[in-house]
Image (cartoon, rainbow, N blue to C red; front, side):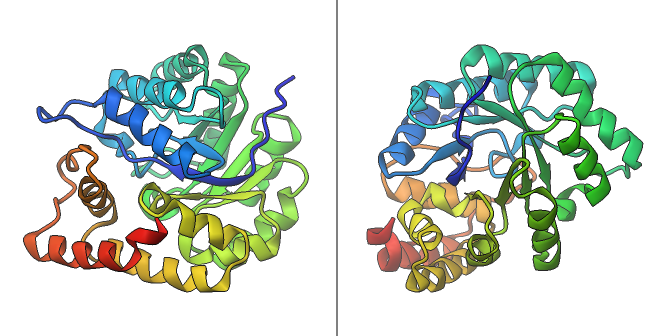
Length: 288
């Protein structure tokens, strides 16, 4: 029986690229080590922040494996396993299992609307293929598909999913999710503007992109520090202004980490954006 504790602050990590634009496994290991050293409770590679739609399946597997190597068993690694086909999803899940991941997470199909019956099988098919816990991931603003509550209820009741991340930015939905699933599976808030509310509602944890660069601020929010809530709001605004994913990578380069920029079609940070982010780092960098 898997006894891994899925709770606290997990980081949705960026995917580093080298000078040629290839996934940089050494940099991914180093980033994971840096984050674990700063006290985070888990690592989530190959998700939205990790640009998963822009990676080949081999690159997804490589990034997940590098995160497992960097974590070295000190914290759980929940590896993304999204693929357009069942064969790819199952292959990625098995690769994550072989690499030593603690669990896998899987968002819904994107772009094309999917009926509830298909969403049920989407998760069941992966769960049948591996023994690792499976976490569902809801981010409808990016996928055009939202996981209905009755689908989640069924998936939790039958043991298909052992966790759930909600990035819908909807506080009403988050409250309904906690009422439905708390105590049955691990529930994570995924919308940084709702992290304080997530804690109040009793989620098991939060999954943060901003924690790539300011982990201690996000940890402080989770610990109930009201001043940190305000800091995180200002940080998030500054990152979003120039594209969150590219901004995260630029701030890491300011720290001396060679992680490259984003892949197309994600726009790189402009020169004006770089100046803004340098000011943001000057103000908040000491807080990490």
